[in-house]
Image (cartoon, rainbow, N blue to C red; front, top):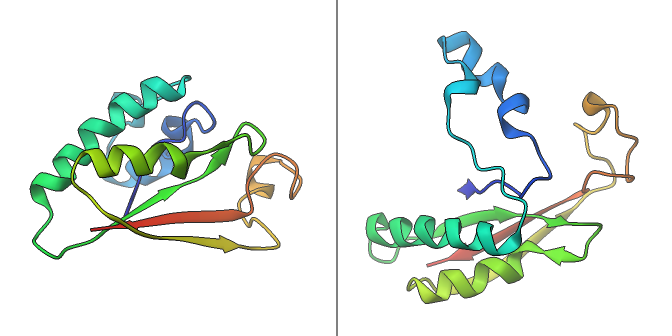
Length: 126
């Protein structure tokens, strides 16, 4: 399973510093997408799906996590499906895990159900 950055909504470099720290990896040295426009994000994801198609074993699957942003105005799965199909992947299903409480929201000082999503959306592709 993989998840691309969600446009400029999340600061992945700052949020993931703890993953690198025990291993001596400075997250500031890792290239991270921080794209603002959907078209720029799609262009980057085109390259990702081409590589996934190249390395995916026959009859293998890709589980690609996406979200919704801009207050629900942009459903990122709608951006992914066309790119996936153009690169030879076949969308099989969209799984939505809706939950009542986002456990990490309070870590960021965000009240539940105000700014962060309470759902995970996963597109299964083959």
